[in-house]
Amino acid sequence: MADGGDPTLRQLGEFPMIDRLVAHRRQPTGVTVGPGDDAAVVNMPDGRVVVTTDMLVEGRHFRLDWSSPQQVGRKAIAQNAADVESMGARASAFVVAFGAPPDTPASRAQELADGMWQEAGALGAGIVGGDLVASPQWVVSVTAFGDLGGRVPVLRSGARAGSVVAIAAGLGRSAAGYLLCRNDIGGFDEVRLRHLVPQPPYGQGVRAADAGAQAMTDVSDGLLADLGHIAHSSGVLVDLATDALRADVEAIAAAAAVVGVDPLTLVLSGGEDHALVACFPGAVPPGWRVIGTVRDGAPGVLVDGRDWAGPAGWQSFD
Image (cartoon, rainbow, N blue to C red):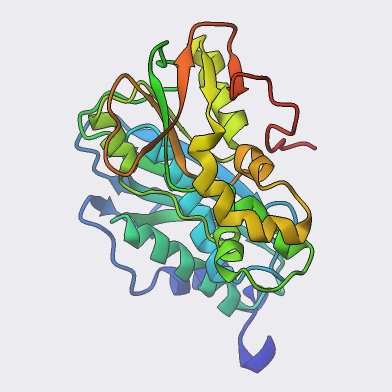
């Protein structure tokens, strides 16, 4: 037995552990068949399904000496839900595959599932199925499904010259929190928490779509990197205004000073905030703030009219 008499995954076995993870969970009304069969059945009234998937690997995307299992679970759901939001849809269901060493205490897997259900529940969504396997370290793979509700999906390729660029939620917090954790620096609890559990602006993707957003993405790899995807997909030039990012810079200035990093660099290139950034042809909806403009020109992203010489964002294979 693990500490305190808690059985391990090996001692419980795959199916008893799955039964334990799904017991007493309430699925939303759109789920016709949940865990327990070979596949789930989920109603999608729109007739189209938004699908995205993302994977978290222990030691690369999270550390269990920094994060609780519950926080890892919330993060796994949040980053997938943000991708659904960026298409102008609402997340409705999640499928989760979890790999862990056989000697992992069952209670730790339970805490992971609790975090996932907490985050999914905040969206009115459910976890409708998945898989449980042995792995050398924790691996959490999530597939998210979303409903467009009759809307046209908001792609990366629709930005046009003359539009404005706007953001929903803050930037740079996760990157600053990561550096605090990596350097074992205490304090700044709110900033550290934003790295451990991102806070996507749920509901703002639909609001942006309803307001006529031309292109949209979530900031997972960094503002410059993710806006670069929009610029190249749309064939436009994006120009950011640092004055419009002053609130973000000020929010992390003290933490950035402690770790010896320019806060503006973190705002422009730090990933995993999962804010939404979009291009609008006119006025932006409530909850959004303008941070730049879209122009004709060679596709790319400028900062105050100039090329940015610093880092642009996360690279998966660096």
